Amino acid sequence: MSRIDCEIPDIFHRVNKPLLVVVSGPSGVGKDAILSRMKQRGYPFEYIVTVTTRPRRVSETDRVDYHFVSEAEFKDLLEHNGLLECAQVYGNWYGVPREPVRVALKSGRDTIIKVDVQGARNIKKIVPEAVFIFIAPPSLEELAERLSSRKTESASDLAVRLNTAGQEMREVCNFDYVVFNRHNQVDEAIAEILAIMKAEKCRVIPRNIEL
View 1 (cartoon, rainbow, N blue to C red):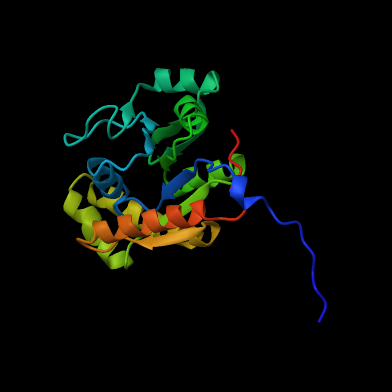
View 2: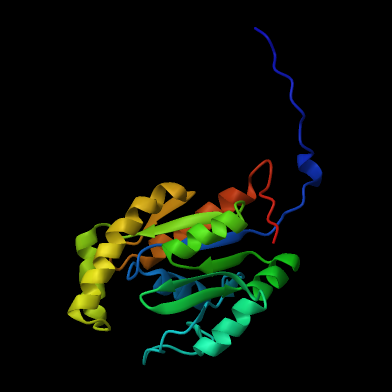
């Protein structure tokens, strides 16, 4: 039997590089609930707040849920290369600020970005070595119930979101991992995300994140 020689990486002096984790999935799947619970529990990650021109909902807090800005402010960020990626979704602009991501990674902090599926696709072109996690509903029927219970969209807007969700589910093959967020089981979804991050930290050859 022939032996295949390969260069052995120096695992005893490897640098524990920070991760850039991109969490995505269809609208209403529970991305906000998952990250909110993670923050409450004090997991030591850098959570990047998305910039948006969408009007703030009553239950939301500026610079916590989103950084709500005017279209003029958003345009200024875009023109000065202040966004890692941006996309227009349901008539509103969303963008990931570049500088907080760069600073967090440079300081060695694992960083989590929450974006829609289109945003994840854009980030993958820029930072392909990021860890991409797709949050999925157990079924489209349950997703429809969640969206309907929010009472934040009209019937026509709800129909658009459900149609879009069906299309976004086909994008799962472009992600590294899938985590199912089942009803009243947010803690289980969080446990799977943490397990993914732990496994990534054990890679023989770490991901090389560059911005």
